[in-house]
Image (cartoon, rainbow, N blue to C red):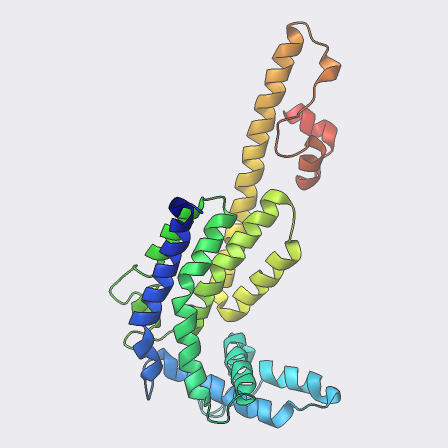
Length: 287
């Protein structure tokens, strides 16, 4: 295998290993600051609810799910059903990983799972950018550089997607960390579905996860989906119109007009008509 073909993978590996090395101190924190305190307290309360309502009896599973997603948090504003209004999937995810880890070792604590999960999610962030880039049609090298540069973004604590927003010494915005990790996966999958008319279930599932990880990122993904759909349809209309005009010109030079066919277009005329919810005859008039 040529070195040039390995270079993107080596670049991506370098980005991930570098994150693992420099962010490792995040796992050694004995207490948390800023928004992490809020996120961990929700995970702690979710763990209490899990122990109370979630048992091996299948008859209790629905009760378990209802209470995990909507329970009372007594230490928030003198008592408030916070998960009913706030994204609850991150807390459930931390607790689920904790319960699985207990099967392997009784010495594991929820706090250690909380910190190690944050550390690993942030470390693999370049991988999600690489996957998104590939789904958007970028070559491997460009996608790998996107992953490499993803964790080099820096601001003056503007609560974005940089390290200052999600690390221990920064704002510690845990749900935002999970949202920014899954958002590229959702956008890459959605673009792939819109362009190639496939994998809609995967895209819908990732979009749902994005909403439940971080509500704002969910809205970003939804609005971006509408924008991508509009751009794809517009480009295809332009391509089809150009091809129809070109073939009409050929017909005027001696070919029969009834032989007009759109062969090189990435989408069939009738399929585009179905996407636009227009009769094929009306679409032909537009073109």
